[in-house]
Image (cartoon, rainbow, N blue to C red; front, top):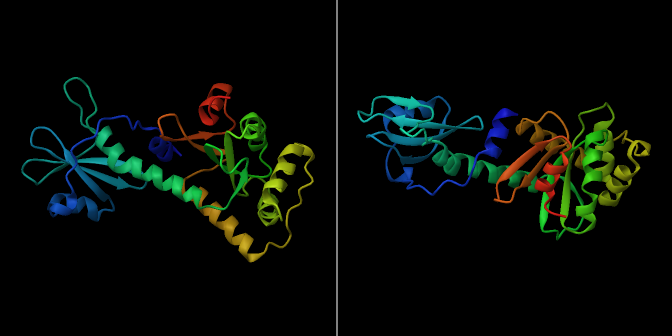
Amino acid sequence: MSRLRHLLTLSLGAALLHLPSLQAEELPDAIKKIEAKGAKIVGQFDAPDGLRGYAAQYQNRGMALYLTPDGKHVLLGNLYDAEGNDLSSAPLQKLVYAPMSKEVWAKMEASNWIGDGNKDAPRVVYLFSDPNCPYCNMFWEQARPWVKAGKVQLRHIMVGIIREDSPGKSAALLAAKDPQKALEEHEKAGKSSSLKALKEVPPQIQEKLTANMQLMEELELSATPAIFYMDAKGELQQQQGAPSPDKLVEILGPK
């Protein structure tokens, strides 16, 4: 989770930089060698003292590469000025992390989720949810004032990881005639829920559930609820587990 959390919490508030296009020139040989090791070079940025900065993406992480003036050596890591300012974080955020965050949000948007609340609510919150997860139920309860007021729509990306019957229960919700109503009844009942796991899951439902599980694995998530939201600055953030009262306001907005 550390890589994804790093992706989602870096600041987007840095000033815009002059970022030359890589398409305008061929990559230097030394940078190509790094690319050949699996790094994706996504942009070039200004650097001091004759260095040339390149932003790279490697396994969901951003890397700052600095080509020396002779073009024969590459430094990897963050570069700081005399005042201790990190000169690497802003270009990495702009060129690597911001696009990755948008991609994560788009993938969740295209996933097989069950809506909870007004579809026209001004705020959307995604969460990976297991029908047997008590903390998912806790967050569902916490969010009621916002959902009932029409301020937030929760979008439950159903998965099955906690118990043996979790996949079957998620499948039952996804296959319900009215999934939103079925989810509401299940969450409202809490421990008394009568939701039964499907013994035979239709292929189209299994495909949806498998896709959700694959997305969860891709994002390196290992527990539910994994909550994703846009903060007040429009930055993608992630919360693991039921949030504290202060965090709840940050996720859902003012009441």
